[in-house]
Length: 210
Image 1: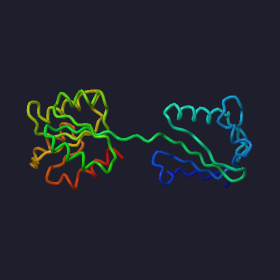
Image 2: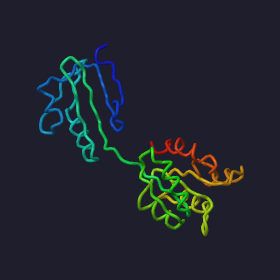
Image 3: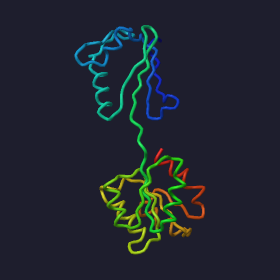
Image 4: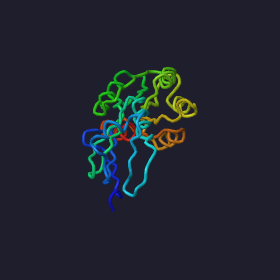
């Protein structure tokens, strides 16, 4: 049935683009420059004679451009259409909370393949203020810190309305079952011991930031 097939896909090499392809009647060449204009009514009959208002496409492009994206189309009369909704690429942010500079550097290096912007803090107070000021896509939290320990930071972050949605991977040298259970109970989204950090951090981080 002509016009009955609609396919959603991501074009090769364009991870922030969603494409929608149909096998409908298509759009005539002379109409293509006009379909995104508010001041022109460009609606035409569809495969079953239906008509739209002609308002949706200009509005969709306006919304995408307001978010620094765009909406475009490839089409020919009788050949179907492909619409491309593009959003700007954005580097994910990862907040690393650890009082040891060497440990923070190691995590930053392990996360390099993600192209994430890594923010580093060394205390609980800094962790809270930075998470609110620069909302991260992921927090890597060391449990063993002086003063306010990682458990308290974890609990505070997960209880605060401003930060509760941020995924948190707890990182510790303590591999006891009770340590893991406590971290998960307080809201940790994942738990990694330092002895497997090099092999486990990247694939687990990608679950949250890719």
